[in-house]
Amino acid sequence: MRISLMSYTFHPMTQEGTMDAFTYLETVRFRYDLTTADLWNRTLARLDADYLDAFRLALVERELDLVNLAVDGAHIWEDDADTREAHHQVALEHLLAAERLGAKTVRIDPGGSRDELEWTDEQFDQIVTRYREYAQRAHDNGYRVGPENHWGAGTVPQEVKRLCEAVDHPAFGVLLHCRRWKGDLADRGDEMVAPWTMHLHLGANLSDDELSDTMVMLRDAGYAGVWGIELGGATHAEAGVMVARVRRVLEGWRLGSTA
Image (cartoon, rainbow, N blue to C red; front, side):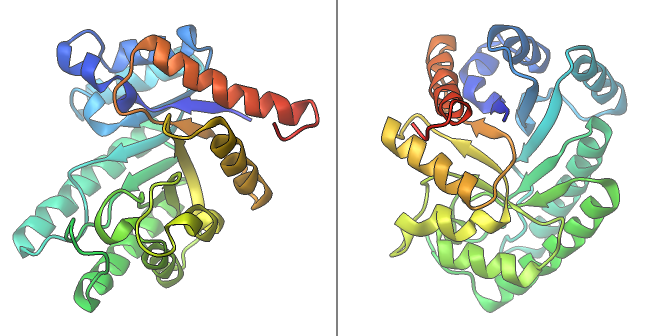
């Protein structure tokens, strides 16, 4: 039972120039004693082969698995056809990067309006078609790809479940951002998409009871992946507290309790 700490957690440090992709690896490996890396794409400085090869070597040297690459700027649906194609090219560039780095999962958002909570038929058909294409490529290269409940219709449990059922591909999955849902079934969102969860992120907004209950539900639903953490900007100490909270739940399981 492993834990990951997404690099977006340290985004303010990246902006300030006090952390880059390589010092992030040092941080998760030696400050928090993790064996995983969980990357936001904009933590990486660039995507050329030399840089990615150096980063892959840094992962290997630290005995870290790249459990997820979360990609912003590649969402599938935009109203303008040229923008959709530009995003598709960004997605392809990042899928190639994920393959070079050995990522286990890749997050690409579905897109659509940030204000609407349901995809139109045109949007849905295009999103499904693209995800099937990406999922087949992922299948051929040994990883999984799919959305996060991030914004717009992608935060509505019924819509995400409908999407999963429509794509219907073994290499398609959801990056579950726990308890981040909208709509009349928001309180059931985690449970509804649990069967398709390929990776997840837990946040500091969860109380201890909510954290434990969420993790137990997902474990009992069959989730056996890495227990990821994403904080929207945190100090080293704040991140350490969240890692300790997740470790406490996992240790409780090891010792035979759910607390």
